[in-house]
Length: 326
Ligand code: GLV
Figure 1 (tube, rainbow, N blue to C red):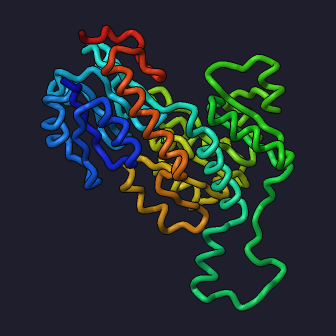
Figure 2 (cartoon, helix red, strand yellow; figure 1 turned 180 degrees about the vertical axis):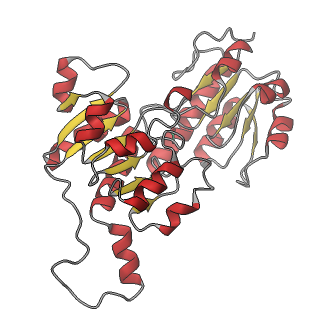
C-alpha cells in the first residue's frame, strides 16, 4: 500500500504527479487554507504532509497526526513548525534551502531600489494624475551606489544579497551568528561588524536572519534610534524580527528615512499604520515568488517527503536527531 500524504495548499501539476507516483495523495487544490481543526482532522490517517509557512504544525497537530513520519515545508524558514516536538515524536522535518536564494536576494534588492527611489510613491502620483511636468526637485531619492549596505544574517540568501552589491560599488557590512573566514569575506566583499556598528553606519539595513525566539523584535525602538535618520530598513526575512509598531512610529517621526517590507507581524493583517505612510514599500511575502523558484520549492518539498516515506534520508532534513518511526 502506498503511504498517505496530505498537501495543505495548491501546488503545481508536476508536483502532484510526482507525489502520486509514490503516494496516495490528498490535496487541497481549492487553495482555501485549512483551519487548524480541519487540518488536524486530515492529518489523522496521513503518513506525511507537504505544508506551507501558513500551516502551524505543533504538539496539538502532532497529537492528531499520530502516524506522521514527515512534515515537508515548502519554505526555507520553518518557524511555523515546532521542530523539537516533531523530533520528540519521531517526525522528520524538511525545508527547501538553496533553490530560492537568488530569487529572494533579487526581491530584497527590489525593495532596496524601490525605497531609495520612492518607486511606489512615484507610481501612485502618476496614476493619480498629479504629475504636471518635470522639475528639478521632483521625488528626490537617495543613492544606492557607493552607499553602505548592512546585512544581518549572512546565510545563503544574505550572501547573494551581498554579492549583488558589488555592481553598485557599495561598502558591505554584515552581522551573523558566526563570522565567516577571511576567504569567504573576500568573496562577499563584506566586513564583519557588531550589531551596533552595523546599525550606526549603514545606509541600508537588510534583515535576512531566521526568525526564532532569539531574533524576536531584533529591531525595536532602541535599534531604530541607533540607525541613521537617513537610513532605510529592509525586511525580507520574517515578520516578528521587527517590532512593527515601533517601526511605524520611527517612519512617522523621521527616526529613519524609509522601509521596504515583504513580511509582517501577524501577516496578512499588517499594522494599519503602514498603510498611512508614503515612506514604506509594501509587498505580500513574495520573496521567492517567481514561477521557476516556486516550482522548484514545491518539487524539493515533494522529493523530501517521498524520500522520508520510502526509507531514504531526505536531502533537506532539519532534525537529524528524530528517531524515525518504523
Ligand atoms: C519563505 O518565506 C521561505 O521561508 O521560504
